[in-house]
Structures are given as structure tokens and as C-alpha cells.
Figure 1 (cartoon, rainbow, N blue to C red):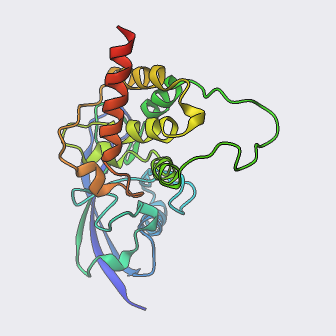
Figure 2 (spheres, rainbow, N blue to C red):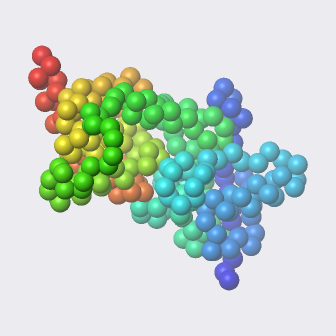
Figure 3 (tube, one colour):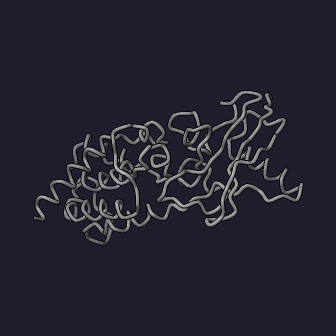
Length: 251
């Protein structure tokens, strides 16, 4: 089993009102089979034994599903591996003696709560502003009741794969949330069940996104490059069309 010796420069910040800074730690004998979060667990065990405050970081499922984990590693959201969450990133992707600079996702709309933990509730408010979908309650309908072209269903499912981790915002030079918002709009507007409220939904979600302080898209494609689920920026184009049509019809 291969092991690594690492130098970690981690952002430490007591709370939202405090000033933070990078603090340096060293780790030896880290297994290359560990995930990145497991490596942080080892660091925290070491700090706890030394009577120091462990590093606060978000995590839950550790299976790339929940979207809670997330940090910028050497300037890349979620680290160097493509379409990988932080919990899925393994230490074999690094080299012995590496210096890893670990910072929280940075955005005006994502205030830092402590160390690597950020407040992503702005995403929740964007989703909430989208309202509801008009469908009949009761038993599950037969799968063939509403004929949907296979390509359309695939596009909707691809958009629905977004886990709301925030990597797109962290990577964007403008701090835009358009990839996230467009994915949530696309997954509904493409399907028959979501078409009834599509105009109101597009207007409300874009308005809320702007009000939360996110920036605008300038087609840098940084968001697409770091998205752990490979969400395409074509969804942004679809969202723009939805918004323009809705705004035009509202006048």
C-alpha cells in the first residue's frame, strides 16, 4: 500500500464575522486508497489529540449524491479529477510531498460559516421561488400515459442530475449560479408536467438568483468544467430562451 506525506494549507475561520487565514499542517503516512474527506478525518483526529480545534467541513453521504462536500483544492473546485465530488476524490491523485491549498467555495452569495463550511441556502431560495408543478395526486400514472420523446427525457434527466454542490459558482469568475438555476429550470420545462408554470417559474427563479447576489454568465465555461455531474452549459441557453419568452409574453 502506497502512502503520502503532505503539507496542507487550510483556510481557518472561526465564524462569519471573523477574519480567516491559511494555516499549515503536515500529515505523514496517508494511504493512497483514502478519499480526500478521509484524509481530513485523519487530520482532525490528529488535531483533536493535540487539543486543537478540528477543521470544520461539510459532508453527509460520502457517495457523490448529497452535494454537501466541497472545497477548492489548489484553485480547482472539487480538485483535479473531472466529474468527481470531494468525497469521491482519492489521494492517489496526488503525489508524495505535495502542498495542497484547501479553501472554501467563495462567493458573495455563499457566506463562510466556519473554516470550509459555507451557507448554500441561497440555492434553496432559488428552488423555492420556482413554485410547484400542476399534477394530479393519487397513484403513480402508467409510464406510457404521457408520451415523451427519448431524447427529451434524457435531456431532462441530465439536468436533474445537478446536486446543488455550488462548484459552478466557486469556479465562475463572476460567481454566477446560472448553471445551477438553468439545470433546475430545464428539468421541468422539458417535460409535460412542468410546462404549465414554465413562464412564471423562469421569471421567478432568475429574479431570485439575481436578488441573492450571484453574478452573470460570460461564457467562460468554468462551471461546466468543474461540475461533478457534467451539467452542460446548453442548459443556460435554454434558461435564457425561457426567460426571454416569459418576459415578452408578460408585457
